[in-house]
Length: 266
Image (cartoon, rainbow, N blue to C red; front, top):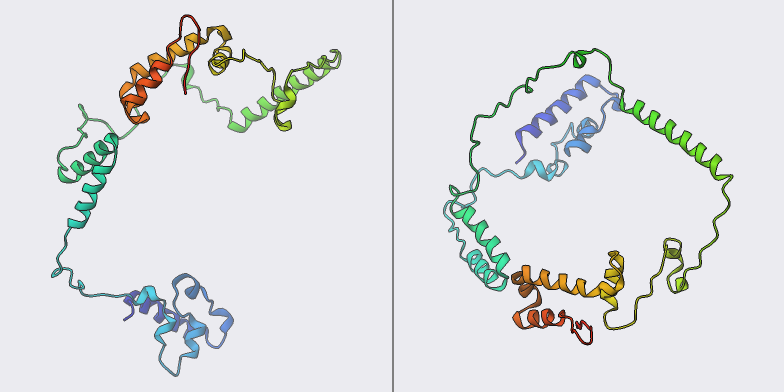
């Protein structure tokens, strides 16, 4: 009921008792902490009686010399196949393609996308390249720490020069930014400017155009680019929006009315 390896380790601990004698301090307890087996100090107390089975960790007592009836048992994958069929019906097209490719790898292992290299690849040794006379020098390359020290010294010298120059610069006047108090305090110091675009139904497109540097009046170009994006990847967006009707509704909402100049999107 105990592994032969574990019995050999216990026998070695028994030999240690005879070697160390009556000095328990030299026994050590590593066998208990590393292997879960009784060490010499414990075994010395079992000298009269037998070693209890509970003192051996369960790992060394889980021994099976039989196949537990696996040869006679019926192994079936019907439940798994039914689950795969149900999942295949519920997922979208992309997931169906992925699931089918995984199943084909299992069903047809000889049909895969891996091919041998067109030419024999040399895996031993570095490629031999002709070296120039300057590359044959025995001068040692600087270590990484030497590069770091040189960089830090240059940075410190540049910082000292900047500090000395900044002492003579007049302080810059504080710029007043409108509507800055409407933002949370911890982010106000990071805001360089606030642009208040025209308050109409196209303020989102105006903000995008202003951030791209085109000016807020170029917002129809943003709508035009969105229409091109929807047309280029129409199949993906139809699946994303849940149907052709919603897709066409959003696409038509991006068209700019020539009279009112309003791009509606909801």
